[in-house]
Length: 121
Image (cartoon, rainbow, N blue to C red; front, side, top):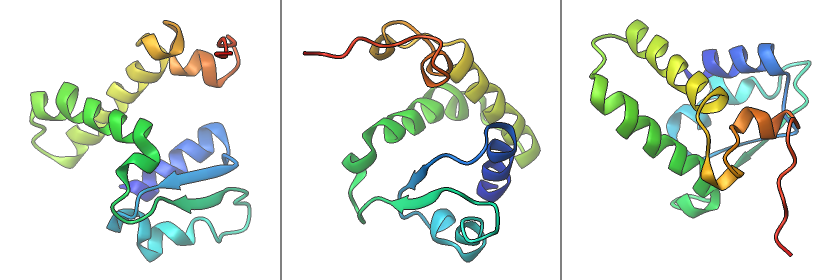
């Protein structure tokens, strides 16, 4: 699942400069880490310290939001349904859901430089 999602994202957006994960088994697996050794990969794979959820607090918050606002509410019956539902949630989260921490913009607007956020002095 993680490799499929990674390859779909890379196909759509290209490789990021750095790809940061925790040390979950899905990210430390040979199948996943090999993606970063393949020809054409320009990303550096970075992993948080073991047991250090605060190293990547923003993505930890995203996973909490995904679980409580989608997965736990919908109780998916199979992986195909789950994959489709999570993809829909992520599309909404990135493209239509406004975030107060992003000055009421969507993550896509900020990431693709459609807006510039004010920096605290």
